[in-house]
Length: 380
Image 1 (cartoon, helix red, strand yellow):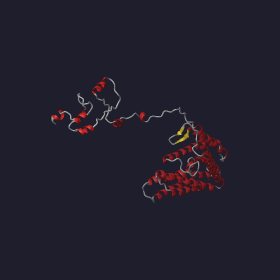
Image 2 (cartoon, one colour):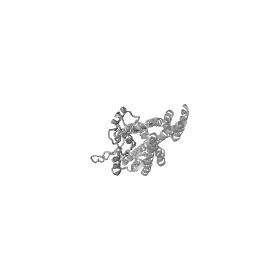
Image 3 (cartoon, one colour):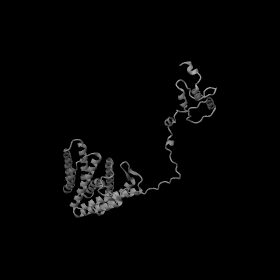
Image 4 (tube, helix red, strand yellow):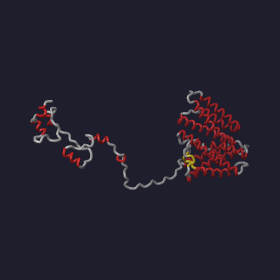
């Protein structure tokens, strides 16, 4: 670039750009060199430099102002500065300050968790059917047990398939379960064991008609269902075979119901200490104490006045055993339902759930009562 490019005096157009003062060009303006001609220089405006930050005081700022320079504290564009900076969490999401002090919510009244009116109505209806069939025709009561077993098996196998994909064969379970109850009443305990073995064998064979995938878990669930529902229910039929069988069965039903009622009443009113929070959060130690107390009192009365040759102290032991077995049976059913991720096994009984939700305490209690009856007063 030649010397004349920088040393020549400005032209008329350039003078308008640079100014006409003798002291030289105006400070802060961009120089017009060879890359700028006169028309372009007139249309060009210098970009102002806007400080992005607080105004600084002191001697340094006065020196900068004297030199005509601006103090820069960030990038040229404000958008870049805003995006690069992170606001504090309390600034991003400020919590609103309440205008008036908030009052604490009123304590909620304890709830039973179910429709009590429906539950009581269904319970009374079932009790009438059971007692009427028990004391009028024993065969009808055996039919009621068999029907309850079949419905319970249907509920259990349906929930297993829905929640776990386990296909326990229902047909051999239903046929074998009903036969198990009838055989136990006709042939006694030996007949019940034989029927149980044949039912398990039928489950193994029936499942062979389907693909082998999942065979082991299906037949295992089938054998478990056969033992859990019909086999345990067979002991109710065994209680009925004695001369005072209806009264023994009635004692078994009364003690189980009284145990559950005592646990519910005392636990709902006084329960504070959880019994098994991971299994059933609603059960408390106070409720267990209520179950034991109610069942022992009812057991003493039933053995003294209902069962032939029974003594009151035997009823105390029987009530204690029933409270323990009923509680364990309820917890076992709760374990199954928690594993399946459900609240109830069914919806057949309003206020109660399904049949299995009512059999949970009865099924494990039946063999306990049968055994103690045999020990205390014999099987005849």
